[in-house]
Figure 1 (cartoon, rainbow, N blue to C red):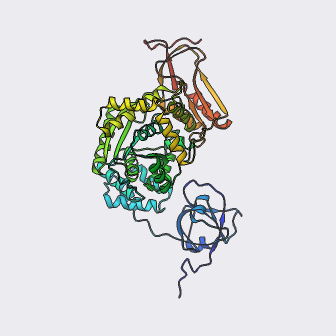
Figure 2 (figure 1 turned 90 degrees about the vertical axis):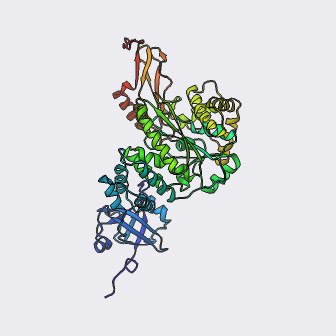
Figure 3 (figure 1 turned 30 degrees about the vertical axis):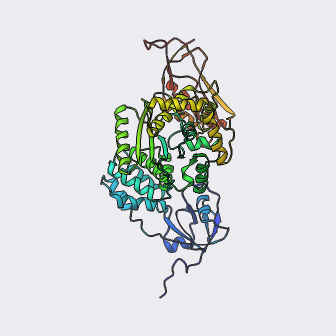
Length: 516
């Protein structure tokens, strides 16, 4: 008797349902579909899709119990439809995919076993090939969390992530890059630093991620000013012309597994140290960097809360970088309070523009921190002291050379535009006179995200005060920006439950002052 392979079975008709499932390809079948009966599919099954062009994709299945679909139709989410480049009623065949063997390695890691190079490579290859559903990615991410990866495993994971995508060789002995581990709202030094370094003649092909657990990443902020979704060829052209770029790494398949993991990490609000190191270094190596500076802000409400924790993280960075032949330096910075005034893509863009243009009201802490980072990088590669590097960075800013270079980079990437402004705002004002004694980075970041950042680029929080500032009654302590009234209300409700986000004391004794 002849067996019916999926290709011999009657095909289904493709139908675009317009459902946004973010990055995960998803299918929809009516419960009475003959394919459900013949293949034994049920909700959340992993399904292999085959098109009439013999293109393949693995997707998660949902079963429809209403009359949304005819029995001979299969519905596609936007992600699945775009990836297969389908047309309405294209013939589609569905079958069971081969078992994902690398899931056994994930299970081993869940139970605390150490994985080797081949096991990590197998996992990463299957992730990039789309064989993992979000639930599998979440299992891998959590299994690698809580310091469960040693330095050898982090090295193996980093190598696997590099090998899974494209790499760039600039044919240059010196290509510099930097990364901040995050956890400090408003710390948007990268566009300023890249502008300074490229104006000083260095090559800086900067690729950045979008936000994971923060209200904005460098790519989110830069997207309010210029095009960041560059192809590999476009990136090369910009770097060849201007010496550097400020692009989103996810559009170039540089360590593509990292972008898939980040999307799930964002949903889980998890950013474990081992995967952080692998994420950062895999992107740097894939982008062709030879020298990298890692900025680690340390503070009681930053991501890294103590110097001991910072030292451990720095040592792991150094060990893994050395294993991979990368020259790396670590800079510890103050993480006790936000940097600049804005928290959120557009608000941070306004800050960095003010610094680059040498405006009198530019946030000086952002300027000084960018100069500190750029100075350390100049010292790292030019055989000068850090003090000389900082002086060179400051001169490059003051002269307007950094601003000219930033404009040139943006023009090469598609043009420089003005960041948007949110129409809805709410101000928290001081109910007493006093001195600012405490600012909670984590609560501020949460408020900014509830206001809509980073998805709503104009949303976020503006904070005009710094630790030690004297404030008068009714002075503005922070301003929430939102693109719609609903999200503004969410953020305000959270703020009302967390008024300790900014604490005022009367004097050095720490006593609370009386209300006005």
